Image (cartoon, rainbow, N blue to C red; front, side, top):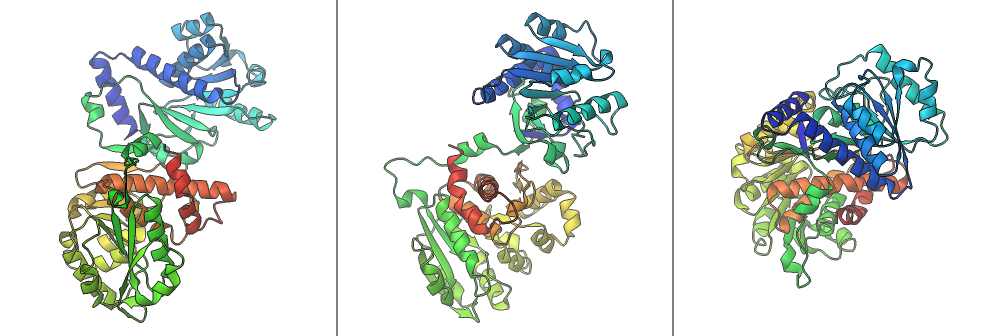
Length: 515
């Protein structure tokens, strides 16, 4: 799913129309696709009654087309129409298909609206489109408010499908009207509008999917978009095949230099996540005192025991690590290293010598920031996984500057450094030096716990070991990580109690859910 501003989407539609795909055809394709999605969901729920809130714009048209297809498929389909001409051909089609129509202008006390809601299974919110600006006009505001009031009093609330966007969301800024109806599913047309992946709008979106409106693959305005939103289909297509004749060497060896006495668990979390991603072998290079504690927790790993100073990796450890690179196919540096000056020298020596595909995380990034021209010393197309604080250390920008322009900052420094940047946080951004970006459509406090970043780093290096390139391993790892966090919160019934180990334990379910 591509990510667009409102003006970009408008330009795409204009170019498509000029090149032979009319607005009428786009609307027909959008409405038919919307109806198909609703029919698929309904199969599992025995739903057969739909109500559409229909406004004057294109989203209202999409909704009328969808209701017509539903009516033709045997649904009881109703449209509650506001500010739309009574001789509208789309309304006539719905009536011919057996649908019912109520006009808001004839329903001053909203009694007809209440009747429409009485037994509805699915509510299609097509009242407003992507180009609205707040505050809402009074007549639209009143319909949304009354709909919320009616649903609050219902014993069983209908499943709400937002058509392109929830009505009342500013699709550029992410601002939301107080009257906005929260959706269970948002079906966006052709591409995801940027405001949907901003707060507070994201809280009203529900699940998110896109429907094809017939845009040709070679349409320049669409093809030139370089930012996309990750989804199940995209990530499933990135994961490697696992043939029956595979062996552990097929899926690579991830070498992970991590941990200190202060952060012992980081090595365990990263190593376990690398294995859970599907890596064939994981080798953990850790300060020697950690081995006795960790070996029993992760018996599948092999070990390189490194000299230490007070439990932190010593600068003399670089030779031992470098002497053990022959079997490794990827390298992760950073989780739990701590801030020792001795370890900083180890980091500098290692990054200058290791030419394997590399991932740098956590304390490894903080050490990098103190090394002159560090980005030139790393192996080509390394993956860097900073949270906003670590990004501040690397760039000198404040956290607020980074957070206020996450996509722009991630892309700027990916290009400047020549490496893939994974800017963590709500709606994690993955940026490539070639200008491509992917946004992970997840914002959850389930991942706001110590150690979850170690799990992410392990996932990425494990996928990299299996042959994914730097960018794809970062996209797939970040998406699986986010899904595992959501699943962990669902298991526990709360985001507050999720531990990094819970995220780790849900990686298998997150991956199997893609298959």
